Image (tube, rainbow, N blue to C red):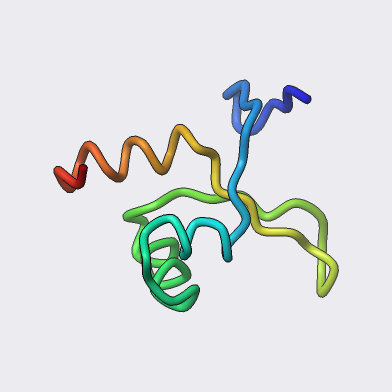
Length: 69
C-alpha cells in the first residue's frame, strides 16, 4: 500500500519496535531521536490509539547522515 504523508509517497514503514530492533537499541532511544529531530516519524491517528510509524526512507537518511553501515 502506498500512503502520502507530508507530500511524500511512502510504501514501507517501520514500527517503533522494528526500528529499535533494526538499530539494536531500546525503543526509548528511538523516541529520543524522534524528539530531537534526528529521525522523522509520523503519528497516525489520535489519542491513545495513535500509531507511530517511521518511513524506511527516513531510516536510510539517518544512516547516511550518521555514516552508519
